[in-house]
Length: 402
Image 1 (cartoon, rainbow, N blue to C red):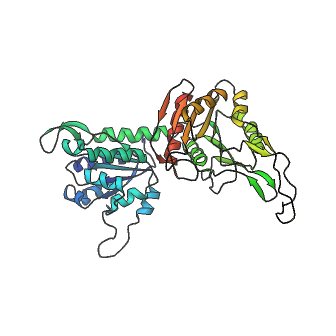
Image 2 (tube, rainbow, N blue to C red; image 1 turned 120 degrees about the vertical axis):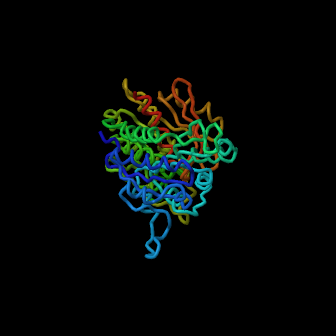
C-alpha cells in the first residue's frame, strides 16, 4: 500500500554529514507514492550531489533563486502552495536559527517562510550545538510557530563524541509523516457545527451594537474540521473572511437571535458544535424603523434586552454522544470565569483566551489559549497562528470523540 499516494513533499536538505541519509529518505518517500521536490542549501551540495537527488526524485534539484545561464526564477511562493508537507532533514543549527528568526537568505528558508503546509524539522548536529541554549530557544520558537520537531537520536556523532544530535533514521521520519497524513482524515463521516464572527443588534436601519470579532478563529476551526474530513456547518455573523473548503456549508446571520435559530436547527444532526462566535449579550428592545437624526431628534434612550444564550440552549438540548465546545474571552478572573461558564453551559471543554495577552483576541492572526475540560484538566498553549490554534482545538475534540 502506498501510504503517501498523491502527496506533494518538499524535502529540504542542509549542509551536514547526515545529508547522506536524505537520499534514503527521498527514496522512501517515492516508494510510498509521494512526489518529491528537493530544495538544498548551497552548503548541502558539499555533502550530497544534486545529480544523485535528481536521479532519485525525477525532478531537477532547486538550490538557487535563479537558474544559472537562463535567469529562470524558482518561485518559492509556488513551491509553498504546491506542497502538502515540507520535511527538512537534516536541519542544521544555522538553518534552524534562520527559520526561527525569518532570515530568508537562501531558497530553502524562503520556501519555508512561504509554505502553507505542515513543516517537519529533523535536527542534526553535534551534541553541544544541539544542547546550546540558543538552539533550544530556536527549536522552541519553531514549535510555537506550529512546526513538527522530529527529535534527534543519541549515538556516535560525526565528531566521534557520543550524545544527542544524530538525525532520526529515515524510516522513522517517514513514519512520522505517514502518521500525520493518516490523522488528516480522522473526522471523516463526522458532522460539526461551528459558530463564528460577531452579531449585530440593530439600533436603527444604519446603526448597530456589535463587537470587534473578525471571525478568523471560527473560520480557521471550520477549515481545520473540513480538512480532516468532517462535514461542516458554519453559522457566521457578518465578517470579511470567506470559507474556502467545499465541505463547509455557510449559514449567514446577523443578530444573536438569528444565530440561535440557525444553531438550534443544525445542532441535532451534528456530532459536535464549537461555539466560537462573539455573540452580543444584549439587543435593542425597540429598534427604530427609521434613521435616528441628530439634528431633529431628542437624545435617544436605548433600552436593552438579553439575547438568548446559545451555548446554554444547546447544552440543554445535548444528547448523549454529542460534544459541545465553548469559548471564553476574558479580561479578569479568567480561569474562574471560564470554569464557571464550562459548568453552567454543560460544555465538554472550553477554550480560554485573554485580551490581556499581546497578539491574542480580536482581529489578530494569532491567539494564545488554554483548553479546560469538564474533568478539570487544563492544557496551556503558546502564542501561535490561529490556523495552528484550530489544529490544537480539533486535536482535543478528536480525543474526546474516541
